[in-house]
Structure formats: C-alpha cells, structure tokens
Length: 123
Image (cartoon, rainbow, N blue to C red; front, side, top):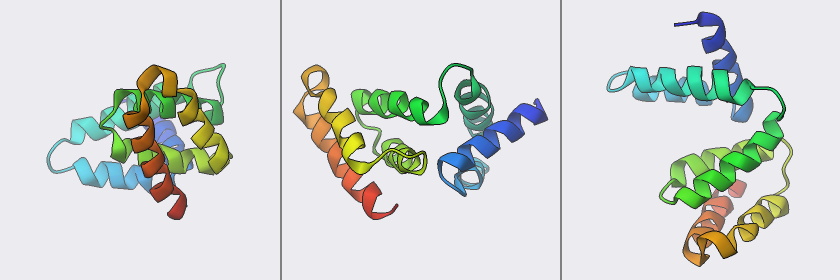
C-alpha cells in the first residue's frame, strides 16, 4: 500500500465529512478491511485528487451518479452532507436532483429528496 496516497485519501474523505475516514476504516475492519482500503486509497486518494475538478465540483458528479444508480441511500446521505461542507446550498442540491428528473424519473428523484431532507437536518 502506498502510505502517501492512503494518507491523502484519508484526509480527503475527512474533508467531505469530518470523522468519516475512521468510520469507514473501523466499520469495515473486521469483515472487509480491503474494501475500506479501496475506498480510501482508490476513491479518495486517486479519483478525488485528480486534476481539473475541485472537490466541490466532484460532489455534483458524485451526487448525480448516486441518484441515478438508485438504492444508494447511505452513500447519498454522506455525499449530500459533504456537498454542504464543500459549499453547496440546499436549494442547489435539490436543483441538481430536479435536473435529473427527465432522465431517471420521479421515484429516484423523490427518494433523493427524502434523503436530502434527512441530511440537511443533520448538517
């Protein structure tokens, strides 16, 4: 494992939501520690630190990708809170979801809005 990349991913994930890196690491340590390493190393060490998009812009891509997949309530909740931490306003996040309506339909957008309501209360 590349410790420098792991540390970068760990720090980036904590920028998204303080304390999340430890939750990911500890939550998966007994059953799937490699998955925690993939999340921290690959997703947040590599992908989130590529050039051309800043962390705020990456949250738009992540939110819409999670919404379109469906059945990602936990991840969507985490990334909605992260979007707020990176400066997105509540109405902007809802507008992102509305923008996807013609492409993914009402059920997924309504589910995302419900998740957003919970995330906004916990921000």
